[in-house]
Every structure is written in C-alpha cells, then in structure tokens.
Image (tube, rainbow, N blue to C red; front, side, top):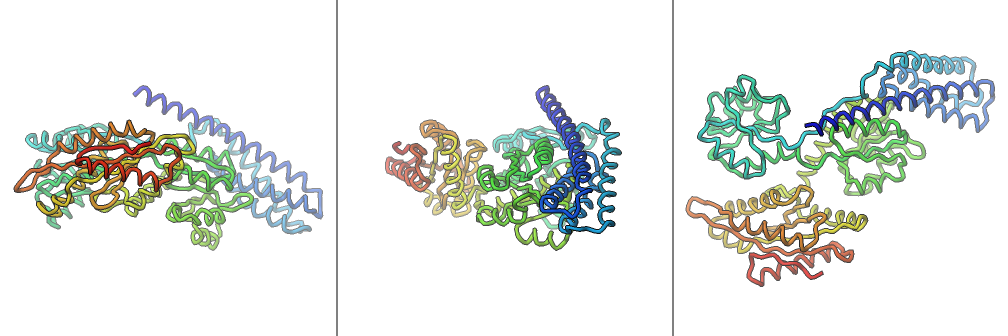
Length: 545
C-alpha cells in the first residue's frame, strides 16, 4: 500500500511539474506572437519572407488554441482560434486593407489579455490538468452463495485461476463490502432474494447470476436488476469460466497501448501523462515520418493524432497507415480545432474514426481513448479468435509469430514455439460424442491459459492442435514448463453421465536460434511433435538446434 501511495504521489508531482512547464511555455508563445506581430506591422507590402513569417505566427496561434484550455486557460484558446484564421488570410493577401490589419491587431491584443487574465490565477490551479484513476489489477471474484454451496463454488473459481472473497447476503444488503472497485460478482440464486443482492451491487462490478430458471421472464428480471450474465444450472464450468475471463480476466490483460503523433511535444507530454496515469502504455512520436516504424514496434490499440502538422497533415498520415492491411481496423482519433464539417467528413472517410476537439479536456480524453481502445480490442478479439476456445485463430497466431520473431531479432531475445496435439482424440469423439470432444478441446485451452504467462501467445492451430509462443524462453526451459503442464493435464479427468476418462497430449518445441524464419520454425516444431508421437505419445520433445 505504501508503494502504491508513493507511486501516486510521484505521478501527481510529475503532473504538477508538467503543468508548470506548460504554463511557462504558453507565456513564451504568447510573448513571441505579440512581438512577431509588432515586428511585421510597419512592413507592407509583405514579401515572401514576411508571408512565411505570417504562416509561422498562424501556427503559433493554432498551438495556443490547442494548448490553452488543456493547461487551464480556456480564454486563451478562445482568443487564439480566430487569430489563426485572420493571420492565414493576411498571409495570402500581399496588400491587405487597413480594417483587416486592425482586426488582427485587436485579436493579438485579445490573446495577450486572455493570457494575462488567466495567468493571474495560475498559481491556484489544481495539481494536474486531468485526473484519472490508475488501472486496477488482481481484484478477487466476490461470491454470494448459501454456506453449503460456497465451498464448492469457491473451489471451482479458484481452480480457474481467480482469487475468491466470500460474502454473505447480509454484508451486501447492509453495505458492509469494501468501497474499492470490484472485479466481478457471482451470485447463486439459492440465496434469499438474489435479485435484491444484484440491485445492491449493480454498477459496481459485472454481475454473473447462477440460476435454476433460465426462462425469458427470469432473464428479463435479472437484466433489470443489473445482471450482465446468467449461467443456467446445473453449472457448466466452461461457460462460467468464459464469463469470468471476459469480465475479470480483462483487467489483468496487457495495458492498452496508445501511440500519440503530435509535433507539439509539450501537448503530447500532457496527453501521455494523463493516459499513463489511467494505466495505459503510451509511445509518443513528434516526427510523422517515424510514425509507421513506431506503430509497427508498439502494436498499439489506438492512435491519437494531431490533424494539422507541418509537412504532412493527419489525413495524409492516416491514409499511409491504412495502406498496411494489419492497420485497417486500428482506431485513429484526431485531435483538432477543425470546425469545417466537410473536412471532418473527409478525415473520417480517409482513415480517421473520430475527432476530439481542441483545447482538449484531459479527463474526457482519457475516457474516450479508453472506450475506443476497449471496443477495438473486443472487436479484434472476435475477429482474431477461435470461436470454441477464445484463443488466437491459426492465421492470427502465425502473424503474431512473425511479429515476435522480428521483435526478438531487434532486441536479441529468445523464443520457443510449442505445437501440441491431443493424443487419440478421434477415439474421444467416437466414444463420447463431439460435444464431449469440444469440452476436452476447451479443457486443454484453459490449461494453457492458466499455466502459461499472459505475455505468452497461445492459439488453436487447427482441430485438436494448439500452438504457443513462449516469449523470452529458451527451448530447454520451455521443455520443463510444458512437461509440467503435460503431467497436470494428464491427471485431470473428464466426466460424462456414463464414464470418467483422461486425455493426454504430445508436444514439439523449436527455438529461434540462428535467426530462423517463421515457416522453418514451424516445420522444426512439427517435426519434434511427430517424433514425440512416434515415440509413444504423451511426451514432449525438442527439435535439434
């Protein structure tokens, strides 16, 4: 707890320093703008150098319009936005009329006045331009059941890899639960008035109701009580596991990865700090020409991009990003003070997904980015996942293998590819039916998810075959990990109405020594797998280096 408090204090201090730096930079920009305009006033008609200087002043006004509100000076943003348009108009008019010059001068004075008025109270501003709670990880599953059921359900949930915190109906109804955000709650409908328990918890965490009655009427009543998932009794453990993974497991996934593309490094630092405070992983790039390389390395969930940048605008960069098929569904949010609806439509048509208007409210920025990233990750999971197991499908696993091999080559990391195959799986389907066979396939998938790290990549390779990519793990070390997993899986039993049986698997492992390519690595792991099959099955073998 002390470490967490220290981290939060450090984050607040960093945000305070960032705001102080931002306020200082705003003042410098205002003074440069006023001085630059004053130097241009006596010079008319304007030559090419003067017009270029007017363009620079317009760019300064654009930055002030975008940054003012973010750092607590909304009046400055309001005054700078029309000044940008006035200066751009003057740049394109070598001999402007006097009334237009007076209008521009008045607007420059308005910018200076807005800065003076806002800076008078800057010392009393809050700790940071935006506040967002840090991501929470590792919360237990809250369980509400009758005493005779609690032990069994606790064991089931614990076996799925989640901590359990038991609570009674009285604790819920009397508000005796902790105030911290909950991960998920499982409510057994055998408790008295289970829907009252649900209503008491609604909005605090996802609710899973275990119900004898799965009729439409009961489902509707549950939905009105705030229940997100209803699992019918007798309990199907795989279905409960899927819901727990969906609700609670998502919290422990890798943090959302965001790439910020903005030539204004001060604003980019403010956005990055707010997003990091919200538990996201952020990479910033100020040179648009480097964006493609950064995106490939970061594999982001979302791109946050300024619409107006020197040399290349956001629309053009979005079109370049969309030229890579892997990035077709990658969300791009534009940061812009653009008011032209036709240009906004053009930006969306050519690659953008949404606009966040400048000046940016950082609380709203965090909320929008999180919602968009969450939706993008969910949609990607649906498109890239095997429908039966939820693991990566064959095509996506091979794409990840290529990406991880490239990353390993850049950083000198070790990888191990493991290909698994269930032994004598056809006899399972023949003896017990395909529904039981599906349970076995899902059982192995869950064992892989539970026993391997979240940083490892797991996929269903096809039929009864699976594949896993163990990051930073040499083949010899991987052999020990998979051997332990093999023993645990072989000891598990699958129950049917007429019998109880166990299943084994064989596995082959290959490493990335010598800069091997993806297809060669797959062939080596496949060869090791078939060697394990020929040697009698139910064993793990490593391909020769």
